[in-house]
Length: 127
Image 1 (tube, rainbow, N blue to C red):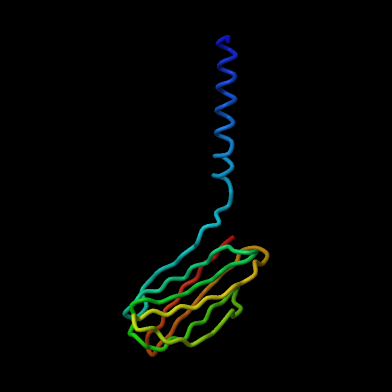
Image 2: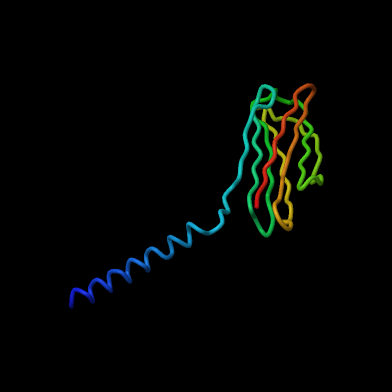
């Protein structure tokens, strides 16, 4: 095999390997988007996952007083998805889940959680 033929074959093989990697790098991420912070004596997490043509939205608090009552409000683009009052379990954990359909443009999700004087919340915007 001539040197020029080998170089052409090597260049072609390199392109075949590099092309899928380039596509993977340019593909939109479908990974979770999370926000964490302090909430009274505990910590909160808001997670938004792309699923089934929409978003799974999960908000949770860990490390709060066991059996304390918390009111959660989850919103999508300013519209309420859910508002519920839940009791923390014996380990001081409480979670709320919701599903939202994808809307045109950016989607903004927010949550607030309140229990007595403790109040926390955050938001996530996804494209």
